[in-house]
Image 1 (cartoon, rainbow, N blue to C red):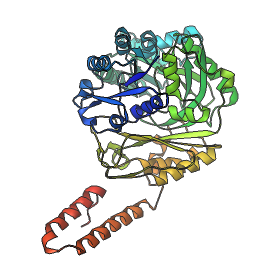
Image 2: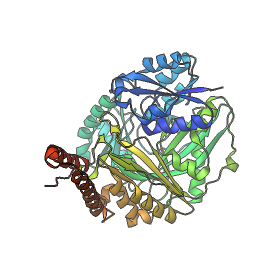
Image 3: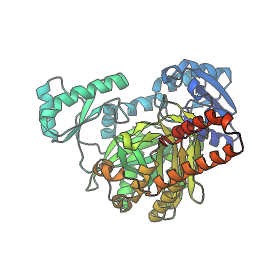
Length: 503
């Protein structure tokens, strides 16, 4: 039985995993880099150990160090979270060789689905519909151009070992093909150490829809319905919801059947996600499989009532699934927005720094998965995600209104955030009507960058004036002449807090 779990990750996902461990009576072990010494996951875990310097290559990607700590503290299992080593087959293999349980699929399944060309071939054999395209590009540029014509422009170039939008290029005309291919290969080589690129038909006005699956070691595979993930910027998801406002019950059933077939084709075990592209005519095609827990998993938990982290741990413990497919129900509607420390008005530039104040939304149907607190300094070394804001209501319309209310309550000072940008998405008629696709943000960016909450600037000014009044009252109680120097420092502090020049 698993009695102690080391979480080989950081930030909100580490906190989220530790919470489920605590509810199961399992001791948790946190690991941290020097930049994360004061992070919430370090404070919340039962034990915590230093990995190394801030750079992820010397900390969260340091397999040898993680295993050294796991052995020293007699860990039963390791949960990789998402990102970092979560889809690294070498890590999964080394964990198991060390006699430790890896909370995830087999190394063979990770490898099979991690290489997109291998996955395409497996899906063909499993009867899963794939996007028309090539398995491997020929050496000759003329042959590559010929293939592109056969597929039909526009085409998409994709890194075989890729993810997160890296090594991807949309090609609309033949003259763009070879230059785009060279750039895609270069980016893939730098990001993944593998420059292999393949070509697919580009689907216009597509929806990005994924199915959550769970599979145990006893041959049981179920799905937990779909998530609509089409609100994206540069191939990175910003808003997710379930159920999808686009797909029909018949389409849902057909996609679920293929999602299960895809998982069975690699003898999958654990939690995973089968991702599909669905065109405007509701034809769907396999995109890829994520062999790990997804960032957006909380909305599935909210509409099904199933704790996916607990399910992962039980599967790793060799327990059969607690649920049968006909027992799973999808109740109500859930939406997740990702809150980042970034400046949408400055090309979404990351905004690390000191969190001076944070008020997280609360109330019926609201969940916040985060890891920052007042006085915490968001490091520059990692993804600028602050938290995930999740809401649930019986209907989609009510869920949108609840998200608006929650975003209105969410206050963070000291760093720039994308809260206003996400508010604008919730206010958009296109989103409200459910008529959006993966081009939604690109097609509406100018409008979305306008603050949805027109009183936001007034609120900021009011906060500044309240702070000034407080400082003024404090100064009245002190001798002005002896504190003149401190007065100047106060004005500087206000400027730092609000990035506002009072002069």
